[in-house]
Image 1 (cartoon, rainbow, N blue to C red):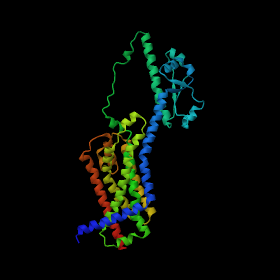
Image 2 (tube, rainbow, N blue to C red):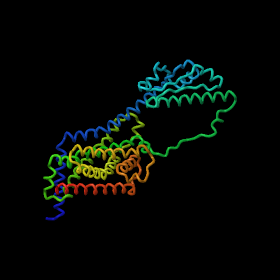
Image 3 (cartoon, rainbow, N blue to C red):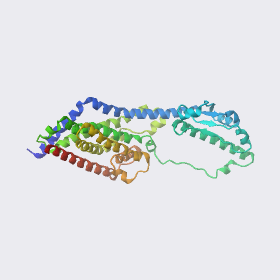
Image 4 (cartoon, helix red, strand yellow):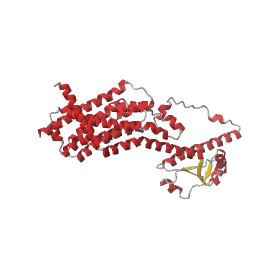
Length: 394
């Protein structure tokens, strides 16, 4: 018999056996797959609803002002700008702390108008809470409106004295944004790579543990090892099935973001959020090496344990490491370093962000992650083969 055909034959047999075993456990498979399928729609819906609520509040043009009666000139300015002035609740500070009130409050001093007329700079206080995100956004809006009132007062004062207000503006500054629409939208899609990497890990986790520590605990691993199957064929078949499940769950998670864009209600957000089939497919291809190495490393950690629970605890360390590593890129947007491309998880995050931004994928960028993933995969599979041989020897 041809050795190569024999190896491929055994590899295929083990692969089919492991894949069927994983698919038979439909309950576990659905628990893994369904959250990944709904991940995209839920994220898009939440983002769209949040931005929609902010826009709705901005369109209302309402301001909560305490003691507006002491500032008739300010009231006149705000009404000319189309703002509706409302009195805040009596316990607005407590409500802001407990996030029951979602709008900042402008506090007007009793001597506002008198100090304004005397050019003594009255102090307007904007009361907010940094733990109340929506109130903080409202505070920034109130600041911009009050700055407009300030500029108008300065202009009127100068013109009354025969001085042109242009003297206070010796130059004009124009902002030129070189980023394309797709690159600007990448700020909104920065969480996608991190969520998809978690999908790869969760998709491979259960199958990796069950095919190693699970079989050891059930007592079916030793009889399987007694069969005349080459070690690498046995381990390779198990690994291929585990990696395929991780890739399949990742595929479902990635493509769930494509139809989810129909849930976006805001036209500007819809134009910026460009994650189509092409971006999804390229992102998925970038994840193939990571899925292979994750499957192998999970198996290598699980085969060293004696029980399924012990394997879960050990694998949790790897899942946490791979899941948290992309946070480096998320917390440092635009500050990508060359070494990012050599770190598993972080490399894929960096490359997927390039896809989302519309940047070209150069071979020099992709090669490091491929090399590291291949090295980790081979080393982990060799460790699994060695551990299984030791189990037979015992």
